[in-house]
Amino acid sequence: MEYRLEGLPPLQELDPDGRELLFKGGRTVYAFDGRPVPVETLQSIWELARWGPTSANSQPLRVVFVSSPEGRQRLADTVNRGNRGKVLSAGATALLATDDRFHEHMPTVMPLRPDFRELWEEDVETRSEIGRLSAALQAGYLILAVRAHGLAAGPFSGFDPDEITAEFMPDTGWRAFMGINIGYPASEAALPRLPRMDVDDVVRWA
Ligand SMILES: Cc1cc2nc3c(=O)[nH]c(=O)nc-3n(C[C@H](O)[C@H](O)[C@H](O)COP(=O)(O)O)c2cc1C
Image (tube, rainbow, N blue to C red):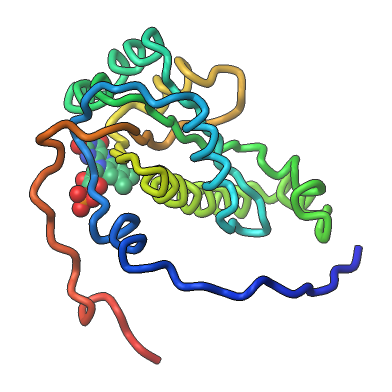
């Protein structure tokens, strides 16, 4: 299959308010006010997040949105004690997983290289590396998509991946690796902002 490059609409800059919302002003929220997040909003969040780039367009991330009262209680009972209150107060929680067999979709998502399916069926190490990296990237896109909808995100990984996988995604071949609580912050919602690394300590120029 041959691809031709095509033109793009003109690029625009996100205004300072938008940048603030997505990055500097965006906080990890630990306590929510309990208001539910409508399923339509969760669908819209995913619709935005799914456009972020992944390695070979592999899109290995899978998501279980836990929004029913029964599901939220079951999730609270499964996560580590320190994360229970956060889960129970959130409007919804996205459980994020990697699909170990994401490569089966390569002929559809990367028709330029349908052979990746057979290649990665054999090369499990490369497949796992690509799956881990790109699923983690997609998790970041999802956090930003939550913020872009005027909601707060509380990412967490304090749970037993085997337990969450067995409880919320049995018989899928997926493996849970983190959750994102989603909702409206309580009046006291975040820890004091923790410092970010100095630019000079983490950035080099070449
Ligand atoms: C992958 C990941 C896992 C995390 N796991 C937990 C967790 O299990 N429990 C918790 O209280 N916070 C958890 N956090 C929250 C981080 O400590 C928090 O995002 C970080 O300190 C930055 O906070 P800020 O966004 O308010 O600056 C996690 C964050 C990420 C991105």
